[in-house]
Amino acid sequence: MLAVRVWNFLKGYVVIKVEGINLERFINLAITNNIYFWDIERINYTALKARVGLKGYKQLRRIRKRINCRVSILEKRGCPFLLHRVLKRKTLVAGGITAVIIMYILTSFIWVVEVQGNERVPADRILRELESYGLKPGVFKPLVDTREVETKLLIEMDQLVWVGINILGTRAVVEIVERTEPPPVIDKSEPCNIVAKKDGIISNIYVYQGKAAVKSGDTVKAGQVLIGGIVEEPGRPTRVVHAMGRVEARTWYQLTEEQDLRLETRERTGRVHKNASLKVGSYTVNLGRRDCEFENFDIQTDTNRLVDWRNITLPVELIIEKYFEVSVEERFIPVEEAVELAVEKTRQTLSAMLPQEVEITDTKVKYNETEDDRIRVEVIFETLEDIGMEERIDINNRED
Amino acid sequence: METKSEIIKKGIADLLELPRDIVLDLPKITLVGNLQLYIENHKGIIEYSTGLIRINTKSGILVVTGSDLSIRTIVIEEIIVVGRIDKVEFLQ
Image (cartoon, chains in turn yellow, blue):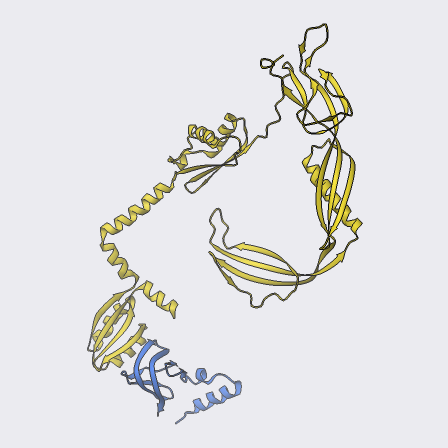
């Protein structure tokens, strides 16, 4: 009934008063002429009130001639009349149209420029560069060629590897990826020392140029000079050189890992329960009738958009959830197996931390069981790596 | 009163279990509590006031009495009467 009412409102209708004798005949004649009446109310013996659509009202004229009765309009309701009334107020209409036009014009400008993804390069600098290519707040959108600005910015700024500009509404989002710069290489002509990157015990030291400051077997601390660039030999003038060499040292890494002794294996039994729900905006309507009755299950959620054409998306989503029943089996693993698992995990973490050429020479494992079926494993890796790092010698500030 | 063709129609309707309201052109009347009366297949309205409505049908004149009666909808096939309905009867 609501749909009918809304329809009638949209089409527009009039409330009429019919006066005369033998109004029943009037009604019968009207319906045989396919005029649709509704909400007929008797006022008194000679009058009744009814509602009739606009088209029906025009057709009533013919009947009125045949029956001696008077039809008068009490009220005009519905969209056509409302529209007519609103349209009469010309300034209001003009105001509304102007507002829409202004809104449209304002949305075709860029008002905010955002920089995302920068860590070392200051956003101000990027914004300044962008401004010089025409991308700045207040610029007319069609005038900005994002591809061109991207290319120009990439060429201009060496620190960037990738630039992506997306215009979202009145916002221009500039995503950048910075170049990860290689460690500064000191020019061969400049004097430098080789110092230790980290603590360790020297196992091999090969000096190509300069003077070894440590020998194999020495314990060194981070920052300590390994190969000196200042070569002082008795009877000769002191030389300052660019030290070169390779210093291999044994280093240690300690990692701890906890491991459950209880392992869960999940296996799908093949039984599936499906549940569909409709999401409109932030409201979710559940279309399924019964709840999932599985004790253990994995959920897989598929979201289907109603329309996915260009960038237009309606806020209506059909969500289908699939519940896969799983049988969960618990088993206890022996401590040795658990330790092995933990060591493997720490090995993976370590290899993610270290450069590839580092060699693991020894592994020491300690573990203790904690109360709740877990073990705590402590692994010490001994590795062999090059710990040398060039460090510039500032000749002018040197004391001696 | 019944013509020969009507007797035959009735027999066919019984035989084939067809709904009688369609075959015999009879009114179908649905009453919702005492609030709403729904009449399909009527033959026009005879009298209408807030206390009494008389409607012509194939089975005779349907008399509805009550108070605050109004006609919600009226088209060639059906009438919906709302209000407080006290009595629905057929007059031959």
